[in-house]
Image (cartoon, rainbow, N blue to C red):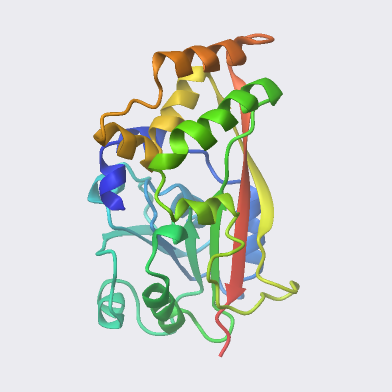
Length: 262
């Protein structure tokens, strides 16, 4: 999947929403130590940057070297370019020793993973029994009724054929994704738990966000421009209804969280 994001790395870094502070505060409250965290599929380092303010050290990995070139640089973040699948030996060599990591996070990427292999590495590297894994996705943006009506038709009719089947796991808010971990303290299950993030966007920024989708890149490679003149006109009319300019765009964030146990 890294190949799908290479050509729009700049758009991804510029347009993707940040994650809410409340999300990281909640996750941190469920980890007993804050020494070392691993951000898997870090992309441009959005989540790693937030972790770096809470954990002493952060390892952030991605299969796309191009994405890492745009990543946030902080002294306690170590970025690593890794293969899509790593053996236990590679995890130990590139990342950390056995049972040494307090937290593993995956932001908007778990649906792309080879889950059995990935979970084997997670179970090996997390501290026992209270090491925590947290994975989240955000679903479709919400602006207002007028814009949402145009967006929903665009998303379900025009864009849908170009999504990888794994995208359905995101649309289902990670409810159906395999997540074989124990509930963290204070919770009866592993979620999903909903948070909300908000970003101020103008219409051009909203289009840049759409162009950062893997589905947009897939369609483009097949000779299809999803943001056709007609689509842009429909969005512009809806966006300008009641005044143009910047709008608060809300992204629901759905979190699965669990501890590794014994």
